[in-house]
Amino acid sequence: MSIEKKELDRIYSLLDNVKDPEIGISIVKLRMIDSVEKRGDALNISIKLTVPGCPLSATIESDIKKALAGENYGDINIDFDYMTKEELESVKKAIYGNNQKLPTPIERYDKKSISNIIAVYSAKGGVGKSSVVALLALVANRLGYRTGILDCDISGPSIQTILRTNYRAAASEKGKIAPLDYKGVKIISVDMLTNAEALIWRGPLVSSAIKQMYSDTDWGSLDVLFLDLPPGTSDGPLTVFQSIPVDKIVLVTTPQTLSQTVGAKTMLMAETLKVPLIGIIENMSYMVCDHCGGRIDLAGEPSRRISKIPILAKLPLKQGLSSNLEGTLSKESFTELNGVINAIAYKP
Ligand SMILES: Nc1ncnc2c1ncn2[C@@H]1O[C@H](COP(=O)(O)OP(=O)(O)OP(=O)(O)O)[C@@H](O)[C@H]1O
Ligand SMILES: [Mg+2]
Image (cartoon, rainbow, N blue to C red; front, side, top):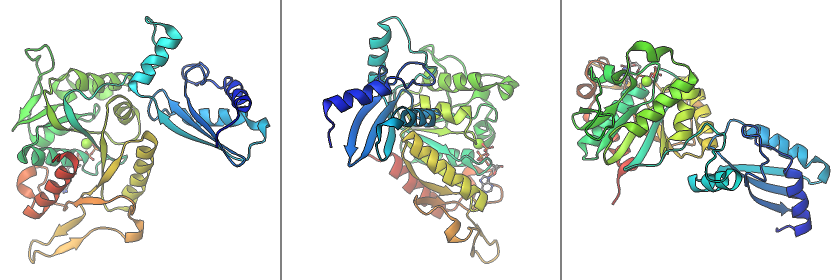
């Protein structure tokens, strides 16, 4: 239901007192109010954040509710989206003119010539994210997709260890970072650029390293770029989701309950950040008996598993996986991974 102009003006004048906590400017002046509607006695407000997944959205929500508390609305429902790069630019211009910047530390990069950017993620460590990234990339490459890997784990880069390479990056002819070419897969990782000092970098340096590797690497044209994310919800993953235009998230879990619980948190994070979570790769899901060839399911009770999101593939717990990534998996596993890649990158 639309609102009469007089009432709308009053709402806007009250909301003018609510400031974006990071920028310190009114959410009205920042053009963050996308729409205001009434449903019965409830008020529905859509807010566009200046950065995706802004950690301060809860503060904005509570400040809006406080500002409108005296207005006798039944419910005040607030939903969040975020501004496009163009919208953000136009707000910056309107407020500061041509030469000034909004004091937001977040910069959003464009897609470059990369068709699909896939973040392989789990908030839990050690579930096999990096191994899955390496496998997916090798399978994608074999299927003919132009493929890359950006190792976003600054304090624990492991792609080089998994692939048993020891590459040091140099500048390409175009003055960009030349990535490792591993059987056709273009790979960049912080241990190709620096020595051990990256292990102790703090948040801002971690963020700028990830951004620099994304924006300064000579990727050329890619069909799919896999991002190997560090575990947790700290600076690394947040930088990735806020700065890199991720198209889809693939969640890696193991069957243990703890991992499933953390998986549920990851789903929530994906929802908040508005990046589609396309499915789960359940790693170390079963074992194959060396003697009879039978399959021993290691998954927990079905009720404890994440039911809403489809399982794209189940990979076995496999002895020797770390020493021979491609040689250890069965045809069946590769067929499942082919399906995952086609779901991610196939364009008819
Ligand atoms: N399916 C598997 N079968 C046997 N071992 C595996 C399997 N998947 C991963 N591993 C082993 O488990 C260990 C952790 O794997 P990996 O480094 O891929 O996990 P990760 O989730 O990326 O870890 P981190 O959170 O530290 O980045 C490695 O030694 C790897 O070889
Ligand atoms: Mg890893």
